[in-house]
Image (cartoon, rainbow, N blue to C red; front, side):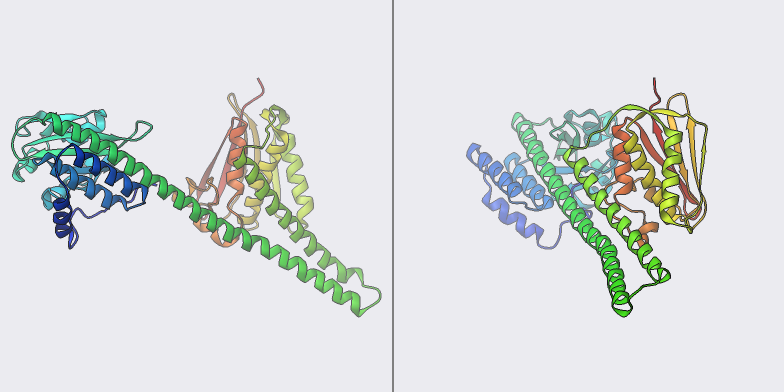
Length: 431
């Protein structure tokens, strides 16, 4: 998740008054520079909103420079554009135009600095070729020079830019260059801390959502089991000998709910093992065709007479290199989903040998998956919007992907909303 930043490049009511008060407390000099840096770091440590920290940083640096007008832009999620974050001293109309600036080799001081990952000094906007596209805009607003430096993250990625503008053609002073370096470092710390906090909050929300779903999904089969047991107790109290025809439906329901409960618990245990790194994966020759036939047969036997047909198309043997138990687990997950979402239509399982991979395809003719959901269904706790009313923990596809990738394979999906889905598992062939 990208850090949260303001989207409207205009000062809110009362901002000018707050800025004057802050600036009244800020003085120039080595001691005040150190105190200002410490103040910014305290704001970061205390969890102040990123927008407030960046505003404070700009106010402080403008006082320290006395001539510069500062601006901070942040890269967007695509890392191709820069979005306005803070520039309270620059004209509002200019900020609106700069919001969404393209990162490029020749695109003003900021777009170029983000592209080069180096400080870009333009001492005369009117004559510098880097400003060809935005020269008229800058000159119209009285901006004649601009030095911009990329804000880099701890891994070297570009987070944004910190710029010093001037109202007269000039190069930055040695002091201003030092201030820019300090500013970009402080901004980088603030941005990374904000994004880290946002990721933690997102993880906590995902955890809470998962616990809520898991509680509901586990509660349903448990409640059904208890109801069926109560029904059997009532039958036992009512007569000495219970007819088989009265017992059979109850036993079938008990078994079905027991299997469902066992499957949910196994998914939770597997997820725990994967997240803790304790799961073990073997690498040995496996006949994918034979595995598909065995799993399909067991599922048909276990689910009863009303289960849709599962057709396995395979030329045996189709050998791959993997973990036989884990391949069965992946296939069970895929077939279970196909049965759940397939509207009772037959399911087609195809096993084929390729030059670079052994392929397993599971095709259903059910509800399908919208294009916007296909990229996230393999993520933990995620379910397609079209599948939300079908229950489940949102773990089976994530588990399948983790297992397949640990066997050095890959899993993908081809689907059309309302027309069914085909899940494709590719595993390395036996050398």
